[in-house]
Amino acid sequence: MTHYKDQLLACDFFTAETLFLQTLYVLVFIEIGTRRVHFAGCTAHPDKAWVTQQARQVMWELEDREPGIRFLIRDNDKKFTQSFDTVFGAEGIDVISTPYRASNANTFAERWIRSAREECLDKLLIINQAHLRRVMREYVEFFNTARPHQGIEQRIPVPGLTHESTGPVRCRTVLGGIIRDYYRDAA
Image (cartoon, rainbow, N blue to C red; front, side, top):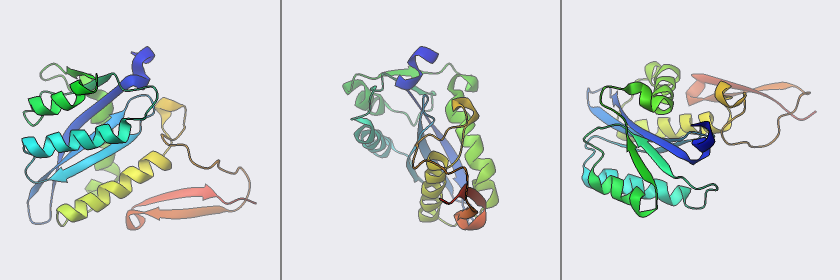
């Protein structure tokens, strides 16, 4: 699998409960090689049209990516419809369904969901869908641009500016202070 890791994309749904006990469904995609996460969206009713549109939007984001995505790993959730698979098939991407009751077959997506819950969602009261969308976008931005990952040699998924090794240490708060990101200013 390590040979194809840069050509693998995984996706999964998870739920979040609002303060008013509404269940919202969140769809995320993760590039296996870089661990870069793409927040597709959240909705209270993930119907065929919504899921298909999210697939199209992710494909637009990834269309100029090199190397191109060749495989999509997803579970057997009924929310993943035939039209969802068709969007990826039209781009030459093979959709791989995981075996039933085998959460380890989609470990990268499942692990990211665990991180999102532990580092973010378990510490917040989500008010509504717009609030969840804002929270997820900010967390995904932090995850992609500032959080080092052991699986990719303590690098970040989207390398930005080079970090200085000298100079004063600064703190940036994420999600209103729930997460603190420490970095060095240029000397």
